[in-house]
Figure 1: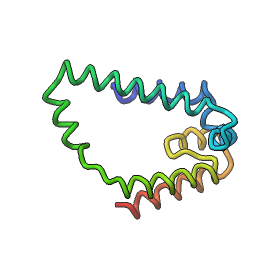
Figure 2: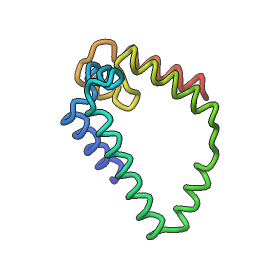
Figure 3: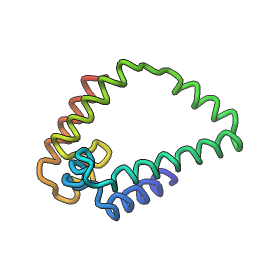
Figure 4: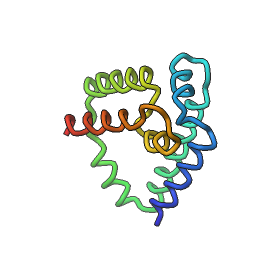
Amino acid sequence: IMTICMGIIFGFALNKGRVFEPGVIIDQFLFKRWIMMKMFLSAAATSTLCLSLMKVLTPIQYRIARNKCSVYNLGGSIIGGTILGMGMAIGGICPGMVLAQIGAGVENSITSLISILCGAFIYG
């Protein structure tokens, strides 16, 4: 139930901010429009707050989650982030917003979804 509620809130925020529109995504990479960055920073702040609460309220589950996420590969992150950023800037699409783009009828969004799924399949 919590997942469904968070999905509804996420979808509402995406629609309200119009950050799923290709022009908004491309303008963010051109440093013309900052709404996407503001939404990402708001999400990061919310995540930090939730993790802080989790650490205090459920320390055992927090430690388990932290241990699962402790592996970090700097080189892979740089290469993957560069490829992701180039794809977002060229295609005007964000993997987290592709379903909203399909629902809104954005051109080439289905092609982008197929590309995202192929990339995920190749990665493993």
